[in-house]
Image 1 (cartoon, rainbow, N blue to C red):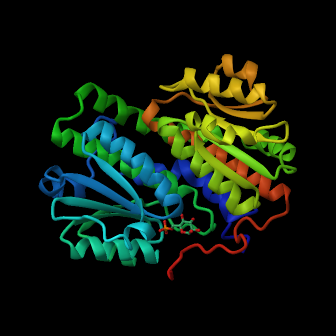
Image 2 (cartoon, rainbow, N blue to C red):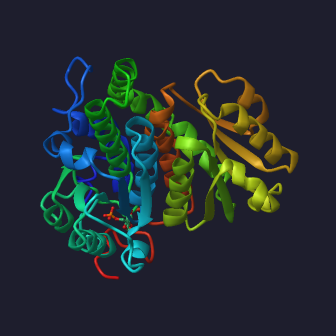
Length: 369
Ligand code: G6P
């Protein structure tokens, strides 16, 4: 009822707005108050297992699979351990090559997704060490794993996952940092910088949420669309996938997320004056490249909605619409850049009169194949 939604019209909007508090809860007791250290206790308890691994394999479905892609980038950069990301449903039926030297990380909000649970059981039977990253305490996947970390974002009711995604990415960041420190694969300076920046994320999310009305206004323009493209690179490529998935799930607009540089190998053919393109173009690593991608879209009359860093003047001059984000470091971009895309999908769906908390054909947790 209305009471449970805390005054919000939908659970999804409530859960989007809860994110600053959720990320704070997720970090509580794991990052010290000074913001100078991070300890994920399961990583410390099992550090021998984790450090001697040949590789990590992350298995997940849906939004959790997008978090896994960000986890791969984080763990590879900070820990220099190779990471593979697999759809649980593909992994389980492929007779995958797994051994005792592999660590399998299973990511699942509900902890009940049938394919992810089956992937865990399979990897366990082959002797792999299994680490869970889940939200629902005591659910099946945490019970089937050797160890793990809960994301502690509270119950998620909206079918489209929002706060669980940012919670998963936060835990993956803390996992990579804790392990990198144990492995000495990160400099003390970088470690301190990432922990410091991670601590600022809840406040930065609050600033983004202040743009809610602006994003609601912008959404009205795009209710006509039948297609959307989302582009990002590096850490923001999974953000593009997640933005597109949110839109599909609740507004029923067809959307494709793509790594921006792959656009020229196909999707660019789709661009015309009717095509909105959301580009995550924050002022980090791939910024210059994304500017050229935006120019290529504008040359074909596509409508560009750019997600930019506060104060950006270059993209503002070429994009049709801009949503500003507070500045953060590149590896934490997903934690800020995802929030406006959640709001964009939400408001477009509301404008179209869709039932955002209970989208057609979708279940919160897919417990059967
Ligand atoms: C369903 C939900 C998605 C979710 C996916 C994986 O498709 O609708 O929001 O991302 O399952 O769920 P899990 O609980 O394993 O994260």
